[in-house]
Amino acid sequence: MAILKIARMGHPVLSRPAEPVEDPTAPEIRRLAADMIETLEDSGGTGLAAPQVHVPRRMVIFFVEAARAEQEDASARLSEVAADAGVPLTVLINPEVEAFGQEMSLGWEACLSVPGLIGEVPRFTRIRYHGLDLQGNRIVREASGFHARVVQHECDHLDGKLYPQRMTDLSRLLYETEARHLAEAPDAAEAIE
Ligand code: NI
Image (cartoon, rainbow, N blue to C red):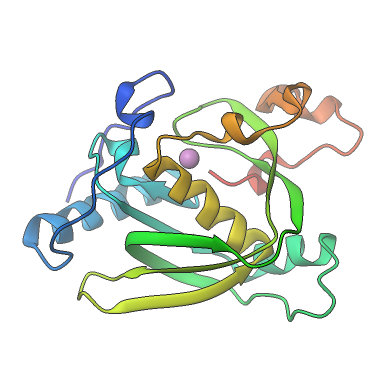
């Protein structure tokens, strides 16, 4: 296993669409997943997409702590939807995401490829997504709140998009170190990576 170098905004690998993974069970894909997991653990982030480690393939990894999943659900007032439980570390290959309704919510995001900054980003509140795991089994899930946000952020990387390109108000793009000046200061640790 190895900790991989992370591409930063401006590197072309982050701005072009990634290619599908042909065989999710291939040894090199298993090795890439293991290295991405080690890199994510080392960085303290919530998710990572293969293009961020200079591999232009459609694969993401992420997890959601239960406390965070509930947090954004509450702020989005999804009273009719049970708060998501946490999501264990998931390797998702060739993912497809679709919005489940048109409702969007704002939340703070960060990205390992955009170090030092955080931004407030609109995302679909509820989504369905599917993809394959490392055994080639199909994963199908519905997600809301923070879980839905993380998946949309990571899958955007596979289409060459970084979160600032999803922002509608660039006055809400901040240096993490200055975010404390905001009245409703986001805890930088709560913004996703
Ligand atoms: Ni990111």
